Image (cartoon, rainbow, N blue to C red; front, side, top):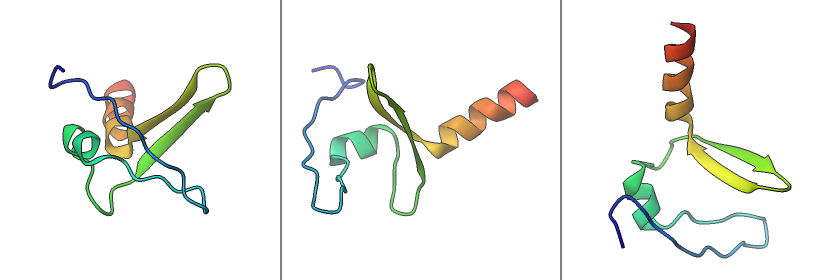
Length: 63
């Protein structure tokens, strides 16, 4: 498998929590205390994005 791609499985706990697999956290430099953005679309699914990435994009757009 390519280093820039990862497929993993997470179980949902009783409180709806999931653990992001270590490989995915390392790939996106997600560390304890970091914030993530959850994007949801009923047809397309769920995406989890590190909040810093969105902030950087916002800064580029708004200058």
